[in-house]
Length: 297
Image (cartoon, rainbow, N blue to C red; front, side):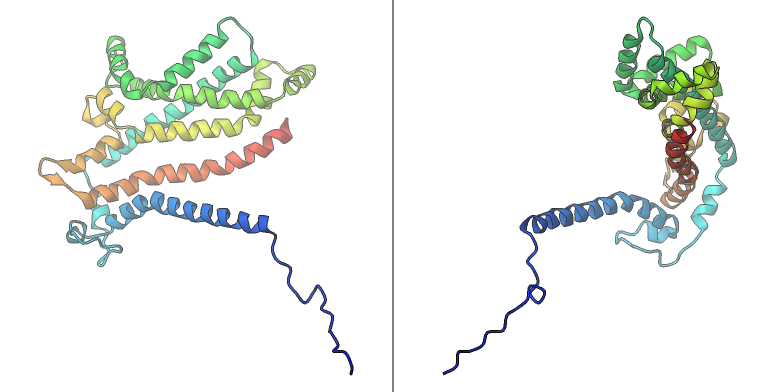
């Protein structure tokens, strides 16, 4: 009687079980991805609904049943928003104030952060603590003291006063952000520039400025958004309606007769475009500054 033959199996024919640790890692990763997708949908939904409402006719905007896509898309809301009284004037006012506030906050923040990070002088830590303390105070709490100070100085109802108010609100954040980039730059780079005969301003412009470019761009983005979106400061500081900015113009769609939701959403879309365009322009510089600065240094 012959014994049955047993065919040996190779390790290649039987798939090896996945390690238990890898299986445990996959589940949390899937959960994190699902949570990230849900968060993104929640974050994007208001933007989607704003754009969706901007293209709806009046009867679809006020319906109780949600309409996820416009059944009869129209540009009437955008036409009504663009022909609103004072749109071009308010756009010009916003452009003047925002550009000046961004440039001034970058210059002052850059010089102040350079002084606080590169020079040793008495009271430097006290200034840093004071900047941090001012940054923690709500902007609304400073509005009345700022109004009284500007009233005494005669800066109310002027572009200069509004620009200074915006610079004062974003300057603590600007100094703290750019100071972190200055601290990360090795001192040996400045010493090498001094050996080559470079002066203080030459070092600041040709050596340190390219290295802290990401901080400068982050500051400019924050200053732009803060000045472009502000409503309360512009409404309080300005009395002449011909000097109002676009956020105050948006409030004009709500009157005693009701709110023009279609026109308001269309105006909000138009109001958001410059912010998106500005970010798309500077985001390339943000990435290139992180690499080009190191090469130049």
